[in-house]
Length: 232
Ligand code: ADP
Ligand code: ADP
Image 1 (tube, rainbow, N blue to C red):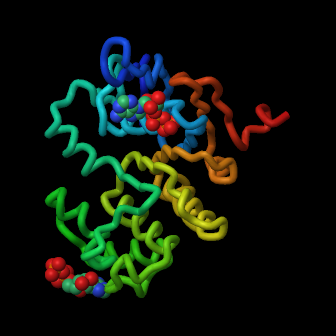
Image 2 (cartoon, rainbow, N blue to C red):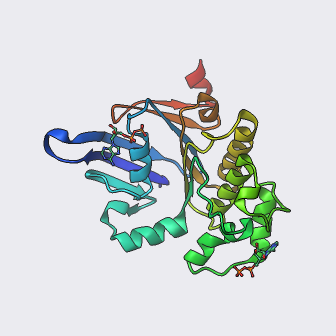
């Protein structure tokens, strides 16, 4: 089965005359170990799409499935367990805890999930993201690109099914952006994770397997990359 399925998802904010219809019948299915970029103009519903797909917000109608689990049918406590154990999150501004060391930031999701902490696994993860000697540093002592690599390590440490990334390169220059996108690409190709990334940068979307274009809360186009049929 697909990693993520949305079926006729609608999201309205507010009621009556002032209601905003942010998603208007979105239906998509994302295969396992795929990398999807979500693009579209400001206000087209990209953030709302990500929030609904990640179980951070509830659609007004329709269903959202993670594997065969319908998130819209889960109570809030089960939903937050599921986010902690099966999903990873990467944000534009990294969202690391400044008072914790790099090591402690990466360890945090394991602690929150009540899972055993394997020091070796955390050290391996630090090496994977190219920061083998930064364990004792605090986020403020690292560059933006290094902080985002820590955030990706934190997202990967629980071996999530799906990683949701909201403008992960939005605060980075081109070179460090490419390093971060390489890590997301490797998570898909080597770890079998499914990545869903909102971006407004075509150069970032080019790393994905497919691009979903949202316009006015609807999927207006879906482009498969690296597919010769599509390019010709
Ligand atoms: P994008 O991420 O593409 O900029 P959003 O998903 O943030 O789009 O917003 C889609 C529409 O929903 C916009 O019209 C926006 O103003 C509206 N919207 C988003 N969040 C809220 C909210 N919490 N309350 C009311 N309207 C919202
Ligand atoms: P806590 O006191 O929060 O349980 P630990 O005892 O695990 O933390 O670690 C104490 C400090 O040592 C932390 O600042 C952490 O960054 C650092 N540390 C722990 N394990 C390692 C390691 N394998 N490599 C480098 N630094 C580590």
